[in-house]
Length: 103
Image (cartoon, rainbow, N blue to C red; front, side, top):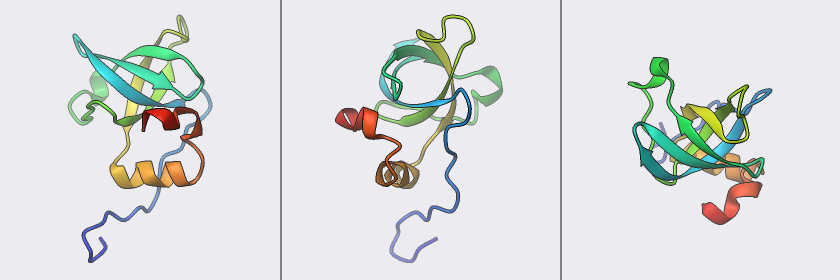
């Protein structure tokens, strides 16, 4: 950790094959979230059961979304939530250009 209280970024998870970055617009209820993604789609996303206890998501969080095979333009799974330091790293490297109006 840095001495001045800032988080240190060592390795940031980047989007893989079918994964996209997104920002949480609002909580829908029932464990679902409305997420605007970098591919221009607005999806209803859920946190899968294996990650439900270890993943904290709130409004304006930057998340990694894996679209479903069926209804992939409308639905997906939130598989990772980024910290503020990781969000700044992604923003500086151009990963969040498509959703910059929501940041």
